[in-house]
Length: 463
Ligand SMILES: [Cu+2]
Image (tube, rainbow, N blue to C red; front, side, top):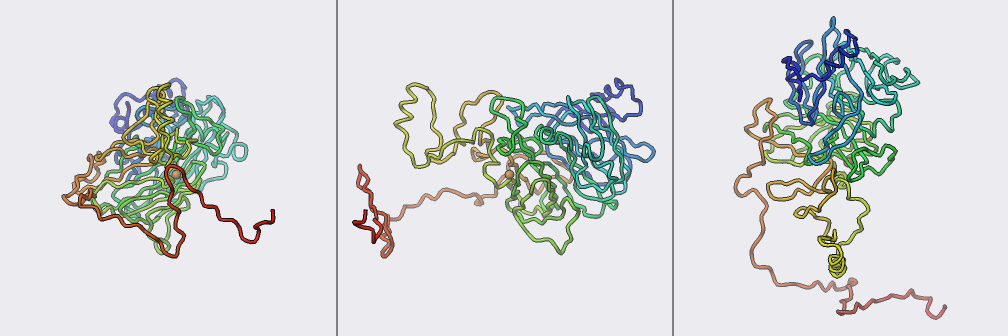
């Protein structure tokens, strides 16, 4: 496993270094490969202008080579195997060993040269979403450049003129290549590191896949019915938590490269949108929110002071986006007594379980699954099943989390008397609501149900 730290300290494990030699192109920068899907805490920049690095959730930032004042990066577009969460892997396309690709971090005013080598079976290109750049560097195949054919390397070069939050993705056979996971994050830091300074700066992309339970490769021609909703190609409980110190100013930057919008919701705090894909928002344009909707192709940077200690949910508010596959096409059975049916089926199929009679909860009862898929709603918390999947993680706010420490501090220890509890007093006498003057429901006569039919007036005897 190679990490950024390994790279900077010159450790071996640089799978990509061999590629450069094989290509015989001595001028190509190294293309480090990441083999782990874990969050790689950011080292400070080894050279160039100083900046405060971001933390990519379940991702990493791409090291560069400084060449006569130009920051040189090497991206390799290639098939990868991405662990979506423990228990499920997907055959995706990505960059440098992972999907999404590595985050690229540069500083406002940096001249940047990006080598892109295509190891996919078809042509590709990279569009630098949101950047000011020469038109011929914008990456739209056919419009701004020819496609990068398999085996070929293209060079993009421009000055990172505008500080802010960006993405990169192909503009070639886009529907297939993005459905396969080709995308990455880009941050251009302000020239003055004191500007827009925060204590923690998290980034990730919203992405989605259609992977049939038990299979490994996304269905690339899917238009709407995706079934795996991910933060950086991970689902809960595979998404790392965001661990911060109480009182930290926290920024979370998100870009949406799915095919639908996501109302992203934070518990326990209010935030403001301080940046979009167009740049920093003006302070007088901001208002407090606890949910912000992120449309397709948009980016949002939210900021808040993490002043409430605890384990706070952070998730997309579309409830089917906090579920994994197998949540589709299940009929609503709330209130339906199908015990008799279940009994008969159980005689034929032992262990058969009818879903949904008392709601959809499966928190304490996970069904046996085919290989390589995940439970619909899962994850264990300190009080039992969390019953979530997909786009869900936890913001952990702790008094004793050290500055620069991103390690998971474990579950929150609640002060005595601050957890919701079961009331155990005497129940009050039942009171029936007679609802005088209103339309009371007729009482059902067991076992037969009496149905009252109100006939329309004025039509009696006219049929
Ligand atoms: Cu969503």
